[in-house]
Length: 479
Image (cartoon, rainbow, N blue to C red; front, side, top):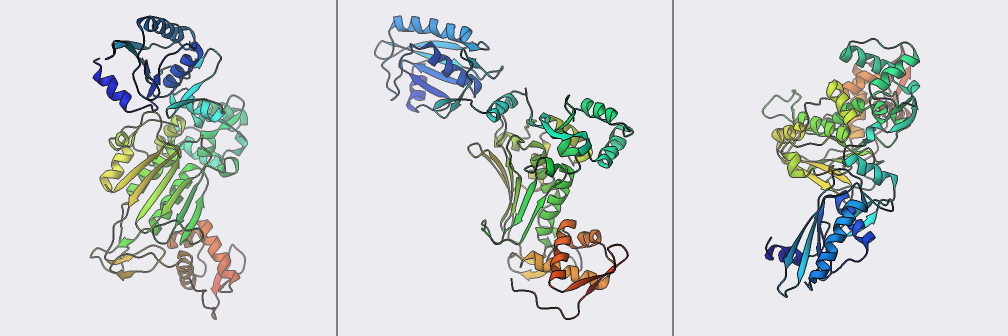
């Protein structure tokens, strides 16, 4: 190495990969610096360089002392021992500098002799002082995964029908009759702990009501008017709960009903084609549910605006993944148990690393943002301005120059519910949900509101009865 390269690096200043030390006499201080680099992405310590980037250098006696100190610290004051490299450089003033290279560790976490784990934090370092940070450190080296964490749910919280169908369809195996046999099977499938509790993967995939056990791991969706988040105004909103396959199906339906349907030369009575292919959102939603960071207690957020759709997942990209790498098809499995079962048909998962590429092939106008400070990963699907006849599943057709946001979707879907009831008084909630394009839960809310407003009434029992539209309906409130 010639002197010009270190001078160039020193001129850039200190950061998370470069540290300057004019001299070191404290063994513990050097051990902390080296452990922090090894626990992060590796880095270089320039010895004989002042904090302001000047190069006072070291004497030859200093260099001999420091090289011995470095060797002792790397082998005896850090656990596990580190293999580091040093290079001595002669400066313009005739003195020397040491370039100490600390590699990214392969046996994380690294402790100093006092048992403290250090991490880089910008140009500085800090102690690991929380269980969550320690778990994430183990997670980064494939020694720990959030989906194997135990929950407080026993196997009695299992959705027996869902689990029975999975066993039958995937493994051609009968559902175990006894609780003891079920527990042994769940443990063998890596869905339950040795203590007899469902782990996080078991809850998210096969619990009857996982939102009662882990209420933070859901999808929250909102359709806003315009292109910005509003504090109180929205066009459509729903929380999607249940096992991951149910969350996926409901979230995808929410997106599709809020997309414009383009007639594209077809007849006015045809359903039209979604402005963005459904396959794009299939891939991105599967990616969010399978690869989000379940150490972060927050929901996935789905925001729909006039000009874009955002899917915001808790957790930044793991390890050394970057946005260019995922666009090229690289991947890193953060939740291996979840992914292994999702790949067995629970979600439309088609292979490691290929989902993002397929989404981009179908719709290239997608941006990805890896927010490491905010611990978020966002996929932004940009919508195009549309001309000609367009519609949404919850609204009527419009012939517009540019597609505008619809009136409040609740009023549109309410009117459609009334029309369906008029034509088919015995229609079920499931039938209404399918025809309107919203969930059973949303239909129930609409029916309750319509009954409270005196616009419909129920004749007879829930089973065997029918709906009736009240003739003298009040005008709906303005929106």
